[in-house]
Length: 252
Image (cartoon, rainbow, N blue to C red; front, side, top):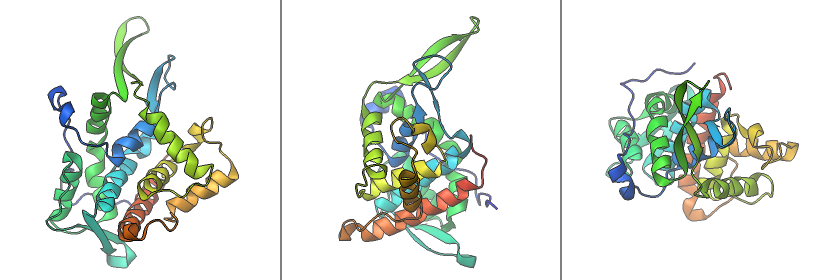
């Protein structure tokens, strides 16, 4: 059963257009949301939707926590009844605003992973989508619905970043390339969202692909670099907990 937040939900705020140039490198959650964007899945050609909306706040929150783990901003430990708890690494906050908001929430005290996911997840979609628009990865457009109403639609921004991310994921799942921890986390979260079958054109939905994806969900990411071992273990634990939490929700 999913735990309820111990405090009101927290999350990053949207950047204004004047702040776009100050954005740092894309976060893992931005990469995940960009991959989940399906450019030609809308009612009209050239418009898109976000796949996996029903589990989105869990998977995006998992990506935020995973980013914190990769950056050594958080550590994990054991809680009651074998649960996993996350705590902020003191005096090591991230510079990114969205990651910092989650780190601030954790800096008050260690919390169960599911509690953190439920607290930070619901507010993430909007700010992350705004960032993708600011970066030019996604474009907001307008369309007439039934010839009467103007609606906002999402379109491919033409930056080319989504195909590059998808190729990284494909290399891991189809070609068996040993992933770097960040790509492993991204691939595991994408698989855990339940949306991989929708990528069948680029990533064939075969038994070997399914097996590899499930292994990544469990944290089997390969040997990797020794220096990354701790961050990899923390991140894999977080990702696995996020996937377990999302798995109890209905899929779309």
